[in-house]
Each structure stands twice: as C-alpha cells, then as structure tokens.
Amino acid sequence: MGVPLEGRNENNKQLQGLGRGITTSNKAFIIDIDYQSKQVISTFAQLEKESSTVSWEVNCGNMTSSIPLVIRDLSEEKWLMPDGKLSIFNTNTNKNIVCTMTNVAPKYQLAHMPGVIGDFPEVNVSFEDPACSKTKALFPTGNLIDKVNGIPVTGIDVAVPMIIINAESLGITGYENPNEIKNNKVLQEKIMEIRIEMGIKMEIRKKNGAVMNEKDLYQSNLKMQVLKSENYQSVES
Image: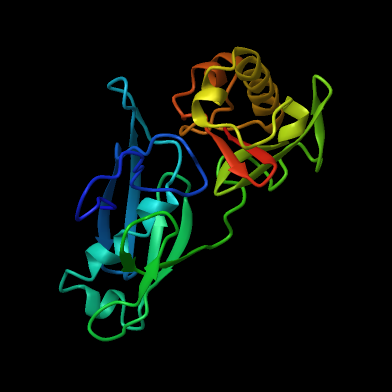
C-alpha cells in the first residue's frame, strides 16, 4: 500500500502520479460477470470524502487496473483471461476496456511506480474508442483551441472531459504545490469561470443524457483537479 516497512516517512503520500494533491481511497467498483459475452461489467462509484454524495458520472483508470487482479483470484479466470487479456465494459461511460497481464513465474510481471514503495503487478490498460465519454465529439466545441476571457484553452473528451490550459496563461508556472493552488482565490475563480463556460460549450452530459447547465456545472460533484504535466495545467471537468 506504499507504506514504509521500516522507520518513518513524514512526507509519504503513498501514491504519486499526475496529481499532486492528497491521495484518496474513497473509490469503489461494482463488478459483475457476463457469462454469455465472457466480459466483466464494471460500475465505478466516486464517494465524496466530505459528504454522503456518490458520483456515477465517470470511470477511473487506476481502479480499472485492479479488476483483473480480482478476476485472477476467481475460478472464472481460466475462461475470462485465457491469454492474459480481460475484456471490461464500463457502465459509467458505456465504453469497452481491455486489461492485459503477462503470466510469468511465480505469478505476476512486476512493475515499479516512481515515488511509490515496492513493486506491483503490471497491468496494461487499453481504452477502446475512449472519445465522447460525456460529449458528442473528441473536440466537443469543434475547435482545437477556444478562448475564455482571453485565455486559450482546449476542450477534449477522451476517457473523461478535460480542459487543457497553459499554466502561464493562468499566471502560474505549473510547479506550485497543492496549497498554493487551493488558496489562490483569483486562480480558482479563473478556473471556475473557464470550467463553466467550456462545460456549456462542450455540452457535457449527465448520466441521464441531459446536457448540464451552468448550475449543474457549478454544483457538479465531479472533483475538479489541477493536474501538472511539465508546464501545463489540466482541469478535469
């Protein structure tokens, strides 16, 4: 679980990936097996850490990678994963996913994640046709670049709807720590304005298929995250 086996690590975050915020474990998957299609049916539930709200709107790639590990402990593994590949249909996004695991002695091909203690079973996750999870197109506005309050942004829907923004356009470097981002009220207001306007332009849909309005976007319980990738910021919608 990324916990030191000896001594103490005061700054240990357990997991370090794209996001630099506090790692949460308030995620859950409900899975079933479709014996006719030889496929796992998965439904992802994002439990809010500060309320009783549960979001059913998106999928989680990290959690998806754990599903083949569950299946490999079941008797169904032999016919669900005869070649190490597991077919998964996710009900949140209505998309197919293929997880692949290499069979090696004694049991798993292991991989190392930078910043995480230990080695873990390697799972390759392939999202089939991931575009249009919650909108009508890969670039839902029809443009590669839109401008909101003079700030150039890119709205893209691949696995989840995202808004890509150059960090410098927001007056930051992209290397700020989480508290600097969280406590920067001017920055948060800029991001919220972009999120709402682009959400409307992208016509992001709710679970029932209805297009989200300004109020829906503002109150959306999909957690907004600022993700660092070199000098760029990505705001998940």
